[in-house]
Image 1 (tube, rainbow, N blue to C red):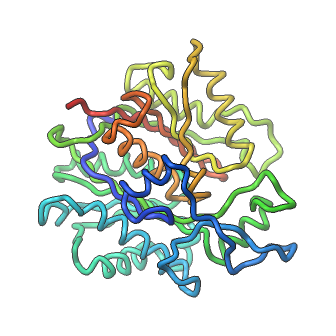
Image 2: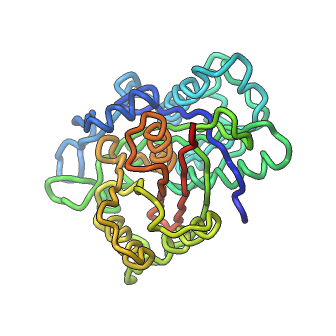
Length: 339
């Protein structure tokens, strides 16, 4: 499917290092983090270190934590927009499978919109359930809504791994960073949002290509990793944009500490980069945010857009990657808008 011209006009972000996209991205550039001991211990009795939003009580449920984060990200998105500009727009939201299974996306959105105190009243809500790739998969749904005649669309993603259920999942999967496991992750939480339209005027960035893939050699199977899923997703995005990987200036990855996902990046470069790039940096939001699950892909995209706006990127073309432990892969080519 051709992506066409999807223009990004505004972004929002809420996480432990900042309650707005501008503040959070400035903190990420400075290497600031909010890691601390959580009121949980691992199977060895050691305190679990994570990155949590201090304004939310640890007694809050996962639903309440995610709703609070999402409300902050949506309010940040609305900030600076003229009154009523977001009224009546469809909203596409990426939600983690665990939250969807227990409470449902409808309950999440109802609670989040209550917390915005009616500052936002979407025309309709379209959930996309999945991991980090889901935030980028939302763009495919958004394009269909825009093609149907909607003047704009809001895409958002949220997740919190700072709760007993998600921490238990990470622990059972041997994915928690600890003194006994150096190849693990720091749990975190975040929400991100993006305002899209088909109009160039006022845009901050444009989606030049969008691709998806499925990796069969996941974290949970004994199969050699070749990077087929991320290669397929990236090739599709590059084909839509009519360019090669060499034409991009930097990468944004959701890799959060595990060697598996860094190996995947190496495999991708070896298979798709046909000429040597002496300077090809990779931005990692997880360096300060930790693992933010379903929100990871969209957080990376927001960071790139803010970088374009502030003039802090290595160039005007980025490729944003996101992948789930279960195998879903997504890639977006993102260009700065001149002027």
